[in-house]
Image (cartoon, rainbow, N blue to C red; front, side, top):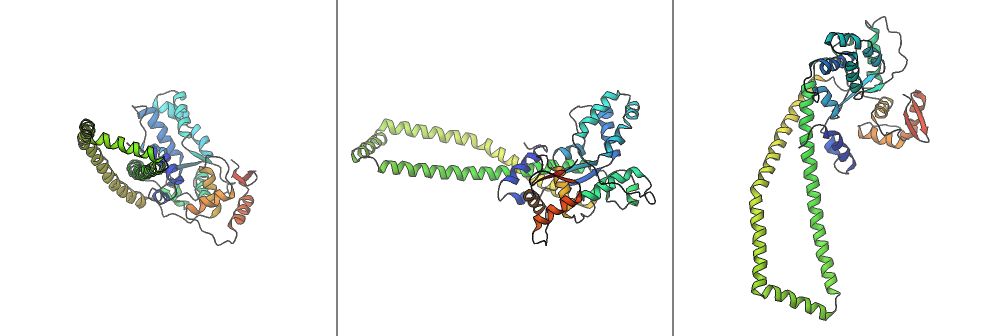
Length: 355
């Protein structure tokens, strides 16, 4: 009923309904900087091992569900395209097919251009890793997702253990938990709304009845008395009511069965969500405190609806737990964005990343 891909739209629904925002805090979002070897693995699996063209890796499903926000430095494009011919030769497929899979994967990644890289050759064994290190630092991402051990010597938070299956299980479990929770809430709201509507309808009918001339009220009362007093009319009403009761009783077992199935799925999903959350937390590095600038970069990068106002950025920052001691935080935020040189005011009070 609730495939993991629905998590993205369910998040949007919950974020727009006042009072339901706390539900979102139960579903984590992980921002990872994806290394080239992870992307190469995705391309090789799609072009060489995948039998079902609709199949996805656990990592791709985690991205599609919104559990993982996959970021890559723009340098990744050149690094991957440099090896496309080798990948095609290794797999025995055409370069066009490999290029097609690479194009699809690019649509799942958010590309970020770090600021000018410093010359850190004294302590960096692979200069290519600098772009990933700086992207991770400047965005305050949780970690770099890579099989490359060089990042450990660069003091970069690293995830080298495969999270694919755990992330997929977590995404699927939370789609059921969130779907049932939202569905229950909506059903409850509709139920109370319908009940309130019924009372309003009855009240309006009684008010309208009271405004009718006396002789009309008497006529309606006599007609109703005649219907209920007449044996045939009473029998027909009784027969109709009995038919409704029989239909409800016949539907009751099937309806109850559906409710039981949904309940069972919810309990299992809730358990799986808790277990996989613990597994993910045990693997991920401890989150770092992020400055307003780092969070602003991340927010603008992820946002796909265009530039944001200072007020919108302020709201996003506070929803993500950021707190400031500044007396006029919005004025401070505007100054930080302008001085960074990475943001552009596209129109009055609308800000976005330059690239």
